[in-house]
Length: 260
Image (tube, rainbow, N blue to C red; front, side):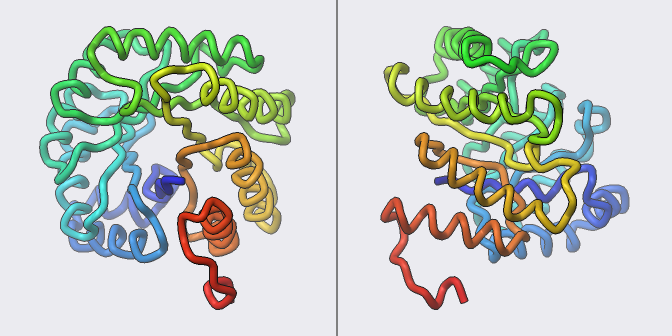
């Protein structure tokens, strides 16, 4: 399972202050720490709507690439910012994300094709679809558009979208996301990867139970064949769960000492 650190987001005050001050040394240190904590990819979010990303995203990319020798995930709706930032990545990044709401989806796919970037396809159309059928319908349409732009399935990550577990239909979303992963693994050929944003399910929960819920959710979805996840790599309990998933899949050699 590919572990993508979601720690560098707009809710991280120290990170946003570093962006505002253009403190590249601080950003480098953050990247190094995330890599040491087990991140295999680092997601970068500089704004919620893409505003200001044309300046901030390339700056952050350059700083993080000096601090850590791992790939990046560029979380931006700003295609101009992505065009500036992608060439600065040491290896093809993940473009995070394209949904059915994107007015210029073709531009994202063209950039992905030309740069050989990976792309997250998110099941989102106005609102997050809650049923299995609705999630798959949105994802199928996005897969077709990506393929039409010559972006192959091996570079696509389908996100069935989950929401806060304690909100209205949150549990239904999780069940249907689980089923979506199974269907995608069984029905899509050539195979496509799947990814979820774990924090979407735990948002708003009491801090003392977040880690337990996140770890259990990740294990549940891993059983469906989940390929990748956006997680808080600073969460030690969650990362122990990640380690066990990798051990159960025979991706790492299990040692009790690693859980001490």
